View 1: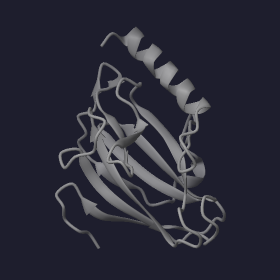
View 2: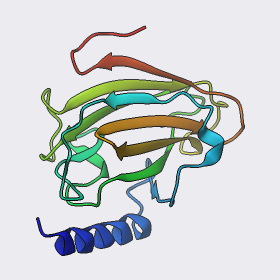
View 3: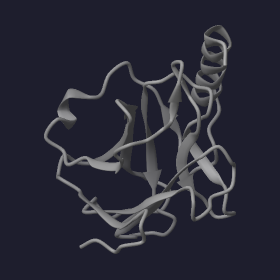
View 4: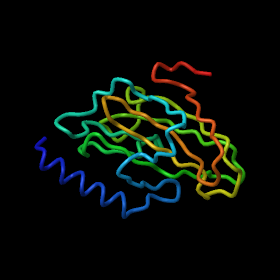
Length: 173
C-alpha cells in the first residue's frame, strides 16, 4: 500500500475513533506516548512475533471479540505502525468483580480460532454501578510485538491482570 494512502487512512481512522463513541462499553483515546505512570505496571505480551506491519502500515486489525462474534478493533488494518492507544471499560452488571477480554489479530472482521491471541481477566478494581468507567486497557503494537496492560480508573490501587488462555489454548495460572 502506498505510504501516502496509508497516512490518509490513518488520519481518517484516528479522527473517526476520536469523534465517534462505540456504544457505552468502550471508547478509544489516543495519546502521543504511553503514560509514564504505567512503567511499574505488569504488561502482557499477547503476540511476541506479530507479522502485522508492511511499509509502515498495519496489515491486520487488532482488537477484542464482542457479543456478535465480530472483532471490535483497537487498531485497524491500514493504520500507521507502530501504534498505541487505550480504551476505557465498564462492567455490564452492578458490582461485577472482573472484566474478561478475548483478544484477536486478523484481516477479517469476524473472530476465529486462527485469529485468537489470548483471554485476559482484569480484577481488583473498586466495585460500583454498571457502565461506570472501571479500568483503562492500553495497547502497544511496535517492534513486532503486541503488548497490553491496564490501570484502575477510580483509584490508584494495582489491578490483577491475568492471562487465562493463550493462542495455543493452554490455560495459564
